[in-house]
Length: 157
Image (cartoon, rainbow, N blue to C red):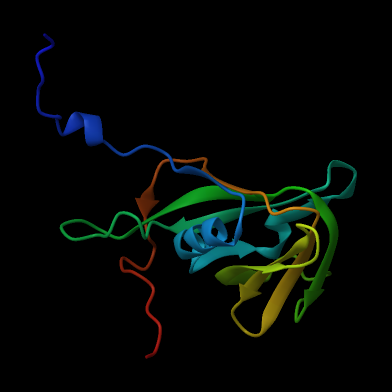
């Protein structure tokens, strides 16, 4: 007979987030976690030969609400795999210093498993990524740091 024990606080310690989305429901989870991420336009790249689009985000840590400490952000990589084409609207590709705010990630299914991943940006910008099949990976790549504003992003109701 094996003895059981209670979990410890250390076992629940913070760990870097690493998630994969393979369908529309999974994409909604990633969308919630990257809402209000900010990034310079220079931190996006489409590697056509690798069929991959990626971006380095400064992600607000929605999964760990600040109650007794400062609000936090963490740098995360969001990669979209199986990319066939990338289009943008409301963005100037020559202005690589523009700071973008990611509001949502949406998957619009197409025929035979294909579809479009839409990255909705503040200010009416959008990046549309046509995919053979949805596959997104979100991975934290730094330790959390205090959000420069000291508080969570807010949206008018």
